[in-house]
Image (cartoon, rainbow, N blue to C red; front, side, top):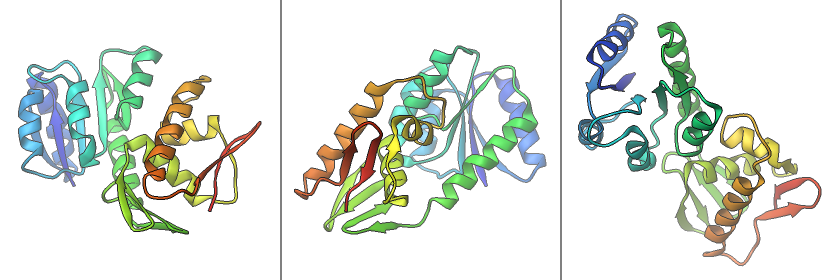
Length: 219
């Protein structure tokens, strides 16, 4: 398992590398967002440990640039507010740890994210929909449509449980892996975007609104 550590504080970067290497991980260090982007264009990784306050490209901008690579990303940040955590998870982070952090806990979180990534590597089929996790895309009647991370996870939940209607709370907590604070707008926007993408290749409405409950797959 190969880990990219993006942290401009050389002491913290080295501390993480030393700890993980003793546990048989392969590690590579980057000390700026620009350096990390260059490395990611030429090498593949099992997980990224990402600081936010970086010279060159910021951590937030780097996350946006690498979303299509589908590499689990754990953010390290001194910002500990709920709002900061929610924003990061909404914008592509898979997990979040506040500084100072415990190295043993970081390792466990790395293992969890890698395990999730490996376990989602098989195509899922339901009717004329085929979810392709390796490309974070969906095939609709033979046509391929790329999805964002959260769009994919919403559709994955619905496809995996086609007989069940999910509440917005259940959808949010699955797709964003965080507590739900009644943010209906976020769910509605992502459902609308999903419907728009699926309708490009089919007149069938795959996502059905169940009034008073939420949404379910319609095959």
